[in-house]
Length: 150
Image (cartoon, rainbow, N blue to C red; front, side):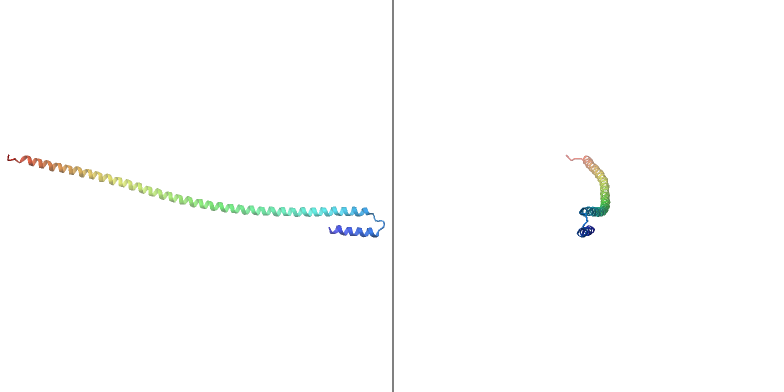
């Protein structure tokens, strides 16, 4: 832009002092310079835009990398949590199975004890009944041998 003003100043000076100066020269020279300046400004803006796009792409890449890292960390933490929960659940399950197995064994033992006790009870009841019958039979037989005085 400075060169445009400098050229305009030179041409203005020339127009003032040179009687043969063609005024269309100002228009032609200034238009050419203006075109060059406009092209330079456009190229500079385009270069600046490309830099900004590149910076934005780099920023997006960094943001994606950060997001991916955060997601990987979250997934790792979730997997650890899942493994811990699975271990806890398996431990609890094994504990419950163990308790159930002990309860079943205790039930079987109690069943066997109850069966033995019932058999002993029946045996004792049969022996007692047998002893009562023998005693009653002896009592009847000893009464029948006695002679009644009447």
